[in-house]
Image (cartoon, rainbow, N blue to C red; front, top):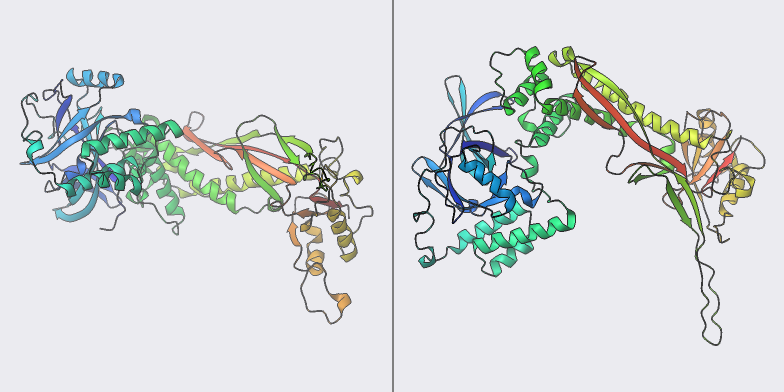
Length: 597
């Protein structure tokens, strides 16, 4: 099968009898090939694991705290060896001597923690049937990590109950006297690099240096620690980001699956393929199963109700689907003034001063003594800040039970359009504030002012004469130090009433006479903004990539509207909140020109 590799999880009970206090090791039977019930888009199937595998790549794999992968503190040990004995796949794990791992070890010895979970990637499947039940056997699979977890699932696997202080032939058969299998070591080094997200250069360094597996593992740990200190987080590998045992990943994949039902052209990710085609109640069933809740005999209504109040994954998954639809509509909604504005981000909600620096002083001739005179920049500052806007709406339990996709399409799409319209209106309100003269600038004058050189002396509809006068005024603009900045208009912003006339003015038809040639054809791009209240006023704007005039911002890391969901209290279903952190302001008047029309 050509499925994208996804880490799958099996859990096994843990017993402390094989604990070796001196070596800090346990031997885990991480698989017996016992069947485990799984669920995909086609329904329930029985998964089996073939134990005829090469375990060399498993050596050096991390032992994690409940599959967490965000920090080096989540790594509590490593796999030192793995082998198949009869119908058991065994691994010896060595636990860290860190102080924060000691409570975990004590809980294992006290019998409180008994679960071991193995994460693995299936490369090849063989599918058969046994009566009405499908059986999928993983004929080639690769374990990539072990975790100590609270809930075991595979009851046939366990920690071996032997005294580990006795030499174990699997781990100590005179290793020093045995010739090193360099190919196996190199394979293990590559596996360590993949798990630690290290590049090919690191792999080559270890192999060229004839590093042992233990040395490579120590080097990888050092590299991860150094990276953690630099970024305060560990970047997950591509496989780990697709781990469906991670609630966030699973919820995101479910939300994408709902979105794919609404948009068949959407290219589904590997994780989401596990849920494509499932109805909303079926997704709720999956959330309950993952949380360890029995769903036998439950109706669709009971599943939805229980999923909403027993686990947050279900509400998060539904919110993800709503958010995807809303963001798509938001990005597609037209907004004229955004074309002539620059988008940026702010780190917080404090007022942000945008400083405009003038050009450097004019160069002067160096005198005979070789003396260079000092120059300087002059600065101007404008300010604006973010504010938060939002609404709450509900999706009823009846709509979820009925698998009504309209609540994930129609309402979120309207929300996305409304968010885009809100931003567009905020930009227009700023432009036409002050009875059309624009906002107050730092010099206590309105944006469009005769002293700013960007306000037409005589009003009238756009024509060649008035456009020429406007362009000339923009060309004559100077910075704070009095130097020309040669601003050129790039856009003409007009209300809907002037659209036809401006299109004719800027048309590129072949004229028979020179006098009839449009001097501005191909030089100005019309931007039609129907929200402008004046049907006559028009504006010229420079390219925001060259000179920033109008600017709008979102909160850093949260561009556009954001969605949050929870199980409803005021509605029998889920409550969804849309939040928008947005602000806008004019940074400079020199890139804009107004004619009252």
